[in-house]
Amino acid sequence: MKVLLAQPRGFCAGVDRAIDVVELALKVYGKPVYVKHAIVHNDHVVRGLEDKGAVFVENVVEIPEGAHAVFSAHGSPPSDYEAARARHLELIDATCPLVTKVHLEAKRFGKEGYTILLVGHKGHVELVGTGGEAPGKAIVLETVDDVQQLQLPADVRTVILTQTTLSVDDTREVIEAIRKKFPQTVLPPSSDICYATTNRQRAVKELAKHVQLVLVVGSQTSSNTNRLVEVAKAHGVAAYRINSSDDINPDWLKGVESVGVTSGASAPEDLVQSVVQYLRTRGAAAVEDFTVLQERVWFNLPQEIRDAAKKRGIDTSLVQKHHIASDHRMGTA
Image 1 (cartoon, rainbow, N blue to C red):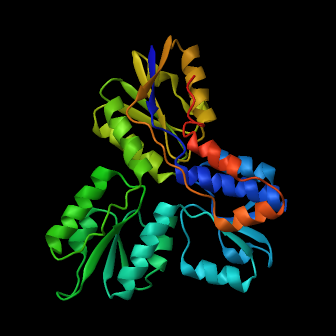
Image 2: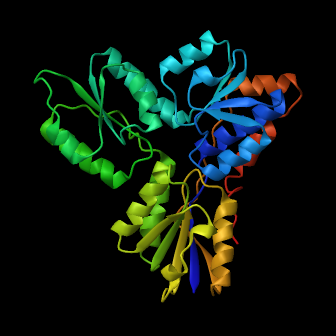
Image 3: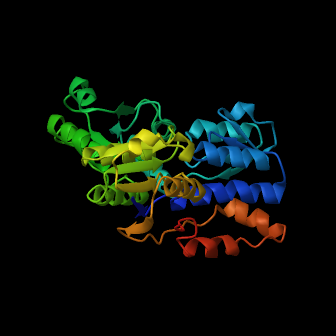
């Protein structure tokens, strides 16, 4: 059996940054540090941070007054920031800069009187934050059928914004349906789909041409992970989402001579390597990188945590250098 490891895979720049924020906050302030929502959608990562002293909550009112708190990478609505101020929290905002971009678009278009058509999964925490920037002016559309059922006044101005972690193909279908039904709809200046989502899907599309089975490492709550499974299946191969090697069904491997392995943008590399080791025990004689492109993207840490670290003599430039190396959490077996 041959195993091909997709590149790129795993942690994106926004996830790296968010995890680093929590770890650095624990180092600077000590425990506990409260985090609103899972910092990223991966159970393994969340448990690891809990072990270090992070406390995860779903509502700002659960955080003690005056405590140190972090808002997750997925973004939060303005009401959460207001609640944080009211509770005098020492807040660090770990929202992914690419999600912040969409928030700013929603805020601007909302002020200009547009009805915002948010393409994404209903109830997803990212869209809760985005919609919160334009209260009463945002409508979430998940499927083409949602678009067909939507009724709007003829003179309403509409604009399309999207969840960053959607499948590019799924987004295209819904957007085309919107533009057909509401031809005057405005598109934002650039795509809201994040680079990491696009790159990982592109890698899976290419990987599917060379393997019989694709295993996608990531949590069930991870939207971009689930999309990778869908993309692989849409390109003609069997595909399964797994949390770790413990989830692999040996029956999946019967008669399979080539397996592709990838991971969602919030899945740590050690889980991928556990899958590789399992496959070796099942007869994988060759493990190779399957590189579609290399990513060289990193985001600065939030200013507030950099300032706090500097006051305590902690050098955050080491974190920055760590990310410029780019492939630090993508090592191969």
